[in-house]
Amino acid sequence: MTDATGLVVVVAGPSGVGKGCVHRGVREVLPDSALSVSVTTRAPRPGEIDGVDYRFVDRATFQEMIDGHDLLEWAEYAGNLYGTPRTPVVAEVAQGNVVVLDIEVQGAVQIKDSLPGALLVFLVPPSFEELERRLRGRGTEDDATVRRRLAVAREEIAEQDAFDVVVVNDDLDRCVAEVVHHIEMARVSHRP
Ligand code: 5GP
Image (tube, rainbow, N blue to C red; front, top):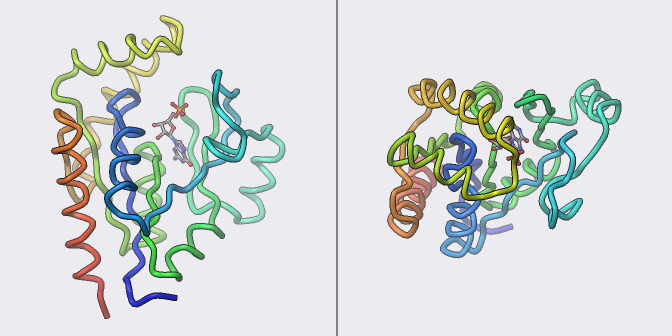
């Protein structure tokens, strides 16, 4: 147990906006931060490790977790289910740590309902064209999947008013510094 104030931070944004890079950057700057490992019914991509990138489960197992109230939030995204396991997040916050959640918009809104003290950060690309360029450049999805993700991204960008802060991911270092600043401000304001 430390004197630090625990905080749940949701860093959401459309697929391809660079959330993974921002999370890694935040965790380098804030050593007492952890990234929540989600469960998903999506198939692993090449290189993804079960238990590290996600816990990969089938739909029946996911449904059991919903029924058992084991998830803080969950959502269906582009045909697959994704959810945040409750126990590890609650344990980290109780230790005074920052827990970063990489989740999509519907899940972020649920977090605000279940944990009103959470900080909701929405990452946006400098432009929609840049988002498409990054998604195609990643080369991990076929054309139909990229198009589906771009369609979802347009809907998600329209939801940004539900977030506490909106940060443009134009330059990674600058973006990380801005996110860390918001986290530090939130921790100060939550201090008992
Ligand atoms: P991907 O398939 O590219 O890993 O993730 C697709 C989307 O699902 C991303 O926007 C990612 O942030 C979101 N996501 C990942 N884990 C969760 C989760 O636990 N809950 C919710 N609601 N979304 C998630």
